[in-house]
Length: 414
Image 1: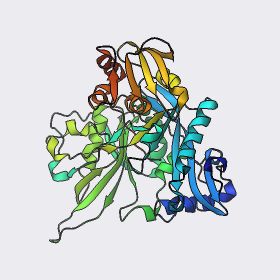
Image 2 (image 1 turned 135 degrees about the vertical axis):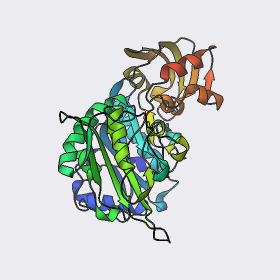
Image 3 (image 1 turned 180 degrees about the vertical axis):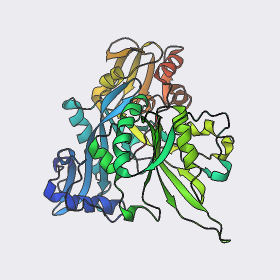
Image 4 (image 1 turned 120 degrees about the horizontal axis):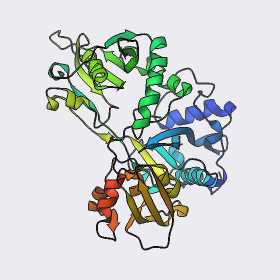
């Protein structure tokens, strides 16, 4: 292998997919299974993959999914970074740095996605490349005997039915297309992504049932909510039922529909434990139950975001409070972002461009990326010493303008 791994990185071919898959799975300590062992899955974009070969051995992999991300008040193209692995024999040689730089540089030079995002297998890895946690998953859990809906909750006049996959999929896809546009961190799903999401390989169930589906419909037949879940059977030493229900996703257009779906989920026979690992850290369920303490939460970082082009990314989102200030950005990894930017924004749009004015705030791209979806406060970052206020009051102004009424949330890993 050449001393400079950047010179050897190249996209994988369809014929190399089996080798590519084995290298990825091996790095994660997994044995690949499922329908796509010999051919790439429909969501794969091998032209945006990168592999590093040492002789005839594949020692590093990466890929990009071309996706659309909901940001405050808008939807932007987003590069979903995935498949990132480096063999243990090739660590500390700059391989990962070369992959990250190649991806970000190509996005910038080709004027592709202004934002990149990923799920981090390990927390310390990606901050040095400008990525930062921008959404959190709630890690919700509880005992169903303590989880009861408030008696004053209006359940409406709709109904909840168990439905087969062929009924669920088109209805859920149509409803998701509506709701995902209002929640920062949600990603668009075309037919290929729905296929990936609903793929149900028995070897991946970890002892649970096949996925089960619910639809909420109004008296006129309109679908206003959906849910997907599994049950893992369990029994106590005394022979009492102790099964666990894992909720994968619940979405609805109204409070009655959402509450009705949860009423059914909390009433599944023989279930005593509830898990909703990917639910929002600010899920409305906590406000629907009579005992908020019965719903445990263990928030953990979910979607990490990186601004590829500061100006395009900041101009794309909306700002609930007017803002007009100069931000001085530090970005050693992507030097085209470094410097002073004038940001002018309001609820209807935004502008971001170069300026020679004195800065009001100074921060790194990592901090700006953390705040981009509205879930991390710039004031909190300032309290941690990661944002410098130059003009008095600038942090308060920026924190208010970067916030958003809806907590950012990404309900799917990739």
